[in-house]
Image (cartoon, rainbow over all chains, first blue to last red):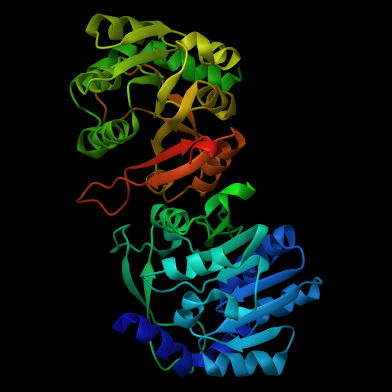
Length: 228
Length: 228
C-alpha cells in the first residue's frame, strides 16, 4: 500500500463513529437528495438475487438491497464500520481489506449477479479491485460504480486531471478526526480503468439534483464483453 | 428535419465563406491549440487505409489524413463548403445531406476502416448518423467522434442537461451572418447514443490545453462489439 492508501484506510478507522453518525443523520446532502436513490435504483434495475457491496461501510446499501428482496453481502476494510454493520444487520458482513479481496476475490463470498462500488474506490490504483469485481461476476452480471462526478469535484483552482485531493469532511457533522486523501479521476480515466479490468461500459448515468446545475455523481454500469 | 436542424443546415450555407476563413486563419483557438491535433492523432492511431470524414466542411481533416498516407473521403451537406474542399483537394469529396447518408450510408463511398465525426454531429437526433457510420465500418474498424466537452460548454447559467444552445461564432472572425442552434449533450447521453447505434465505446479522451483547467473536447472511440 502507498502512504496515501494507508492514510485512506487509517482515516476510516479514525472517522468511523463520525461517519456512522453522518450517514444516520443524513448529513451528506448529495447522498440524501440524489445519489443514494441513484445507486439503489440502479441496483433494483440490474440485480437478480445476490449482490456484493465493496466498501460497504456501516451497511446502509446492503440493508436497502435486502429491503427489495436481494441477498446482500458487504465487506469493508474498517473493523469499526463492519462492527456497526453487523449491529444493524440486513446483510452478511465481512472485515476484508481491499488487498485481500484483490488477491482472492472469491473469499468475499463466491459469485454475484451484481457488484457495487458506491463511493468506495478512493485510491489511485483501482484496477486490482475492478479486476476482482469482474472475477466474481456471474454470467450476465453487472458492475455498478458510483463516484464523485468530475464536474462537481473540479474547483476554481483545480485542473481536470487525475491526481490526489483531500477530503476534510466539512459539512458532514462533527467528530471527523482525520482528513482523507482521495484520488480524483477524470471520466476518461474511469472508462479506461473499467476497460483495463476486462469489463465493458454499458451505461454512464449522471444523477443531478434538481435545483443544481451540475451532476452530483457519476454512475457507471459495466459488464463482461460477452454479456452485452 | 426539425426547424432547428434546418437552421443548422442553413447556417452552414450562410456562413461558409466566414468558416473557411476562420479555419484557414486558425481563428478557433481550441482547434489550433489542441483539438485538431487530437483528432489527427486518433486517426493516425486507428486508421489503416481509408477513412470517411462525416461533415468534412472545407476538408482540412481529409487533407491531414492524406498527408499521412490515408485515402480520405469526405461529405458535407453544404454545397459551398464542398466546393471549397474540391478546390483545395486532398480527398474525394461529395455533397451529401445527413438525411441522404442516413437513408443509404453506402452511397458515401462503400466501407471504411475509420469513420470520423469531428464537431459534425450538431443536431438533436444523432442516432441515424451514428447508425450509418456503424453500417459502413469494415471489420475491426473504428468510429471517432470529437465534440465539445460538456465541461467546457457549461456556463454559469447552464444546467448540465441535454438541450439546444446557440453558437454565435463570436471570436471566430467576421463575416458570420447567421447564428447556429446546436444540441448540447451530456457525456452520459453521448455514451448512450453510441450504444444505441450498436457500437461499443472503446475509449474516451479529454484533450486539454496545457494552460487551461478544463478539457477542450470530448473524443470518443467506438467499435463493433465483436471487434473489441
